[in-house]
Image (tube, rainbow, N blue to C red; front, side, top):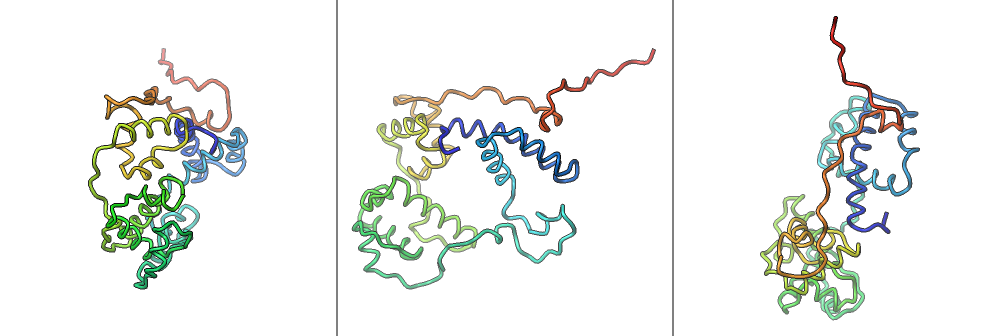
Length: 258
């Protein structure tokens, strides 16, 4: 799936949505293991990968576990949510200790591992020096958007836990993109080098703003490849089609009594 362009990945996910919906109906009581296997047998490797992504996207991580597993058997609500089942490799963000020497070396390009608290301090110090997140990427010789990715992840952790956002994690208004950046965004997207989400993190813009850039809805005076408008969404296929049957759909004609 990683070899597909951003447009192809989006189209694949869209095409797998009805398959995911059909599997959900099967698992929730309309079918058995054989029916599920029949659906999966008709998919290639890329389609299966896309289906997994769509199915994961349909799960609300903030719903109680008792609700998520309620279709198996009645579950006692223990107060936990689906999100709590995911592995959490985050360090203790409440720790006050910050190794200032490590922070300075980090901003100088040294390959040092910082705790989340130290990383936040590094971003704040970098901003005080006039460094953007992309500047930090460049100093550390990492891919563009790496620093922005971590900032975004930590911001979501803080918001989820109800903590006050430090200045380094606060979303702030950004100046207009330069013409050069607009062309970079459009070329990266058209070449399949980055998705809309990846570009939004890299340039610290919302996904909606990046979508408007690649579609030409904004910055119309700037060049670069423009994403072609998508066609109309395909009509929902019949459930028999989902399960691999290729026969004609049942007639909806109702005979009138003579």
